[in-house]
Image (cartoon, rainbow, N blue to C red; front, side):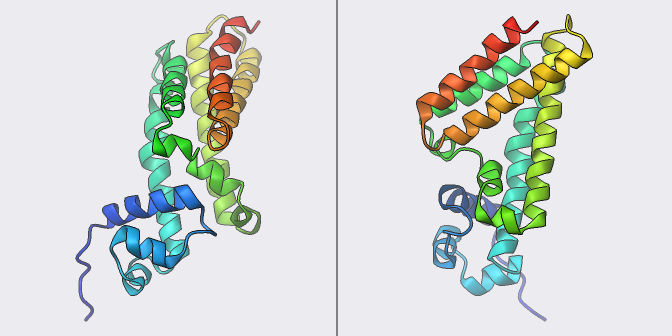
Length: 192
């Protein structure tokens, strides 16, 4: 019988997340993962099956712990929830916090060469985008109850696109990302 792992799986996933987030899947080497997680190559492979298995665990944890936690308040009936979501994101990007500087891990994965060859990554990113659009739609409906359903759909699509654009820009042009997020409030207010 093999030895039981003596590490905290959650801590390993969190440590690996920061490396994958900064460097991307393809550019991250096993040696970097060993250094960041404190595990040996064999322990990583025993626990996660492969570098890709660890990456999959990282993406799943990111979706659950970061993305869904931030999206959850958007469907709660608060008319100011979308502005609060955007303001929090904008503040993190403007402050140049280390994680905000890297943009969105899921969008980064979705725009990497890995996604073009991998149905699982494409499905995960597509599912994330659908969740984000649904949450933003709920927030727009709460914020603009005066609009018809088709107008809420259209406004939600624009707001979600602005959020995706900002998260994509955050890595390369922090000021443009913040300006893009600032346009969400104007768009919400001026939409007819």
